[in-house]
Length: 212
Image (cartoon, rainbow, N blue to C red; front, top):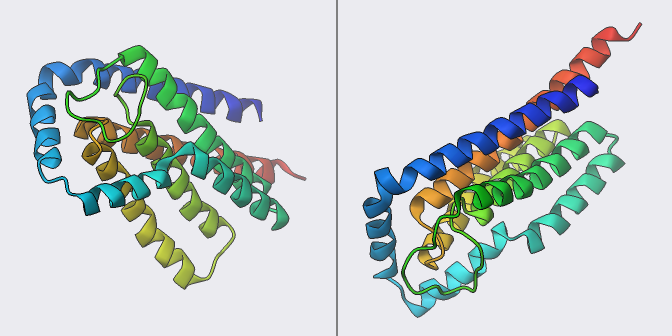
């Protein structure tokens, strides 16, 4: 277990470093393109789209995802899948910590457009995109771990990325993030989740092989 914890810690540190480096390089390489993309999205705003964006963005909010993760972990524990429950908890918890740390390191200003949602802190990466990517991917992996019916698993595999992309798009539409912010968030959240599940799975395989 100590080796597993060390691997997770090193992987987490590597993602923080990668996020910081990308965040520092973006303004110089994609600043004008990023701003133009946000302005184009803002130009097509309408009351109906705004209502939809404000609703969709909740699928990436910690106020929604944390309770869902608790329910998911409880269900996995009831099915005697403690590793999957731990992976789900670490995926979302680590993603939340990850974007907080990278935001503090990068300190990128929010897009200079009208914000349709109250926000605080810096722009890069998108916290909603990071934790949405982490949780919804983790849910797919949890369904696979508990050998859910094929139809349910296929539905989750289709819906999860659609939800993540919708959340990411909503953050740009609401004017609180650049496109690069949400793309970085998706990659950080998915990367951390995939790494977490892989490390815990490998640790389980090693432990089973060492049993007499």
